[in-house]
Image (cartoon, rainbow, N blue to C red):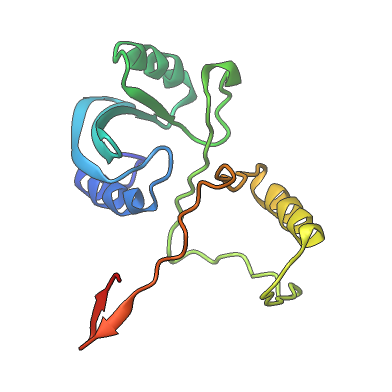
Length: 174
């Protein structure tokens, strides 16, 4: 059992669905295997399908603070593979060891959940200016704690608009 409530088979199903989000620690999967299972430490090998081929990752999963140093040591032997440490949120970790951080929560679906904030006002914009963009950035930073700026293409690197004509329902490029 992983996380004291989920079998490895259930974890694989869950991780496979999660991988559809293409986040930094879960990408589309080619293969996933349980590499080792000790009392409170599981090592999981994953092969992700990424642009340009296959990338290997190792997940070290533990719920016990005293197992974290062992988990970190276990990850060191996997060379150039992406290394992911999954531990409870309150686990103290030396942040100099990591280059990205994410939080994942599990909860009982029968548990009472928090009430939504109903005082939020929603507004649909079809156009916006730089002041609005600054507001968007501030809200994202407050909500997520970071901002991922939109990638800008160099001037002139965009493709000119394409024109297509339709003949009998078939699109053709003139």
